Length: 328
Image (cartoon, rainbow, N blue to C red; front, side, top):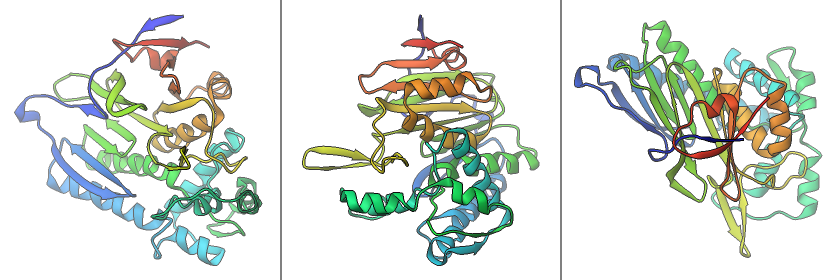
């Protein structure tokens, strides 16, 4: 089935409105990405949002020597705060739900590929096999009964942390009486409420072959998390071959699923973040099978040849582009 969908702006969003409804805006660099916060409140509200992001970054960073994640990876055991423990539980839940396509214990593989370092390289098969022996969310799942976690492997929550942070910021702003906000945290977008002028939010999906342009655009009102994962975002080339950063926890190599990007729409930011990675690894067939048995997310898939597929709930938000609608 074919349906006309959307295309408009560039990478992330369009905001417009009267001057009296102008938001307070702030750009920061945190969680290894540039973030833009637009809050229909005052400077103190934005400052509180920035403080919350920095607080979570300090807890969850895989490279900060003072973080709880770094301590676990260094020592094999760590006492976690409630936030870190909550996010770890969310990560394991996504792992279980996707049969390990998303796996927070993938860090031994990330290390040997060099994706947290300045120099990347293709590891040997022996290195990959050794790292794979330390990967598997099942071990972590068994440990999550107390906030003190011990394990032989290493974890990386980078694939879900920005979504969690966006969700926590929204909750914080709501507690301060804020009704409208737009958060762009790298490939993560989270809205709170509707725009004051009644216009819809407009969020573009980057064209994987030309990331500064939008291949599709989602138009909607109210609160929603939208997270895109794609092989075009971080990669290196060696001997003429491109290797992207989204690793398949089962093979140890960059996922080769036939997809160029996946955008997940959900009301929970952490869920959208984790699922966007998982669906990219799973590929179209398994990803749509998971969607059909779920009721808490929608998705837009861009294939390597540039075709756009959208689940019916996501397709209803697209305009002015051609896509294939996936129905239940």
